[in-house]
Length: 95
Image (tube, rainbow, N blue to C red; front, top):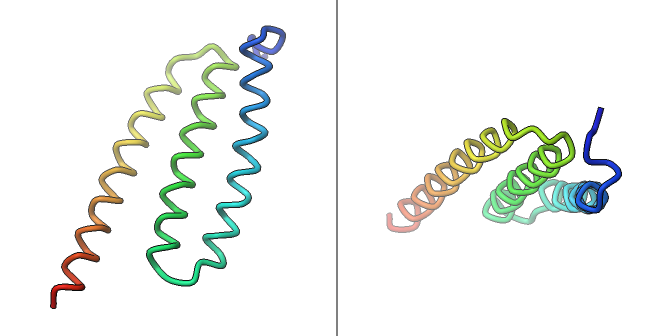
């Protein structure tokens, strides 16, 4: 069961989870309706950051630090993907 439900930090984590879910819904709309490719990639990057926030809030609620390792690895992978896409766009505009 969730151990941090009754504390102030647990309540703040639940509120944060609600706001992150709303943000995820709004960003998925931008991903669907984005006018061009860079807008969609930025939306995907933001979705990954929101998922990292959700994982972190879940780690606070369950009082399990293993999830923080997952969030850290996901952050590194997202950073590498964003960097690779930026290099791809830069090489495409030079030619």
